[in-house]
Length: 257
Image (cartoon, rainbow, N blue to C red; front, side):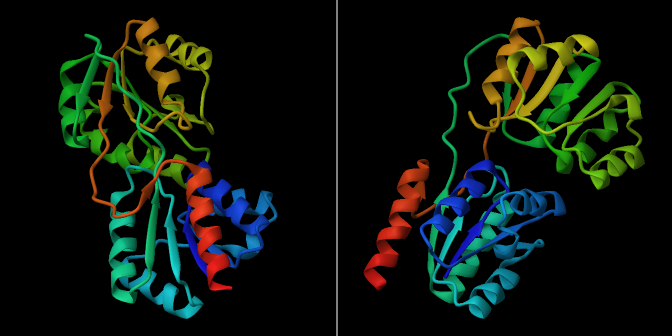
């Protein structure tokens, strides 16, 4: 049995391909929104929703007879990846990491690279007064300390709980853009112009996450862009090709047979 830690477009694709290969699998997502994505694919039967720590993962592994974990979570979800690796060590099973390739961030006076969310907040404080946040709901709270001195615009997934969180934190309804990406360069530019944005905050979400479209749109509009670089974890087996990770699992399954 294979456990796929999903929550990304690539994670969904891995599940779809392995399912089509006829392999036994289960996948986990953190939110109801993520679960609905699998329902739309007709794969709700293999999808479990919930957030797990290392102990929770190890229980899930033992209860389902998991022998391989494929971690296809977001590059910035390092706590989940660490928990999964720890659980695999505890249960002595194989851990495979799939991570979308990084994109080389161009050198430009308007691009400001930082290593942490805290650095991004500090940098935002000294740049423009209309800040466009594209870093996900989990990081909005870090920027709330700026709401009395800056205008914060939050682009988040269209999940009711996420919208409620933004409202509860004091973000104006007119400053919440609840949409599912990725977004084209033209649509990003239109949003920047609509709200007169002069600072954007983003993560290196890779090509699939629409990172370049955000960067190009911001540069074309003369907008300061804060890029939070990817956190680093050491992975023993890491893949950046969907074909490669699916093939590795398929071959292992054939050998077991």
